Image 1: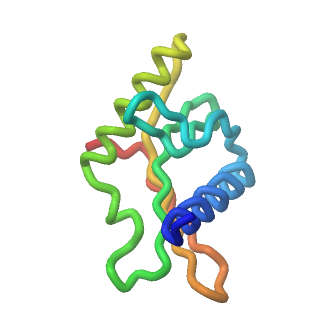
Image 2: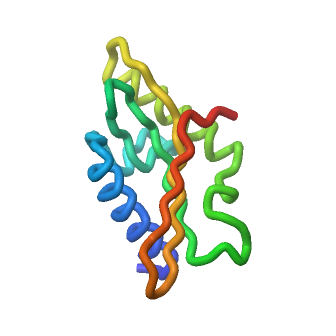
Image 3: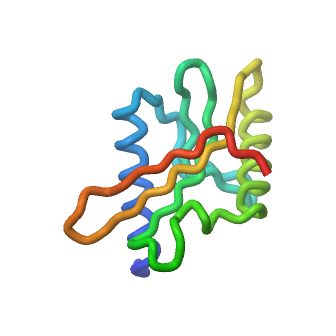
Length: 118
């Protein structure tokens, strides 16, 4: 597996563990419909969260959350719409970005941006 894919998976593993420790219930990871994917779908305090996870090794080229494009948010929203069609019913939803900075020899830093909208 390519190094960047391994790093992305490590970031998603850390994200899942952090969300669980923050009382989120993980419903799906890497949920896919056609070309759309949602990294993590979770439920917390009655709200369904569609979460884009972005990891980085340093802040040298900006923070990880700065690399989430408007197009990525739009694609996540389309993926969320497909999920909501497959699992119908009244739901409160929001779109989030969870940025994780993973520096060698240090504890990961987590930054959750809740309720992002383009």
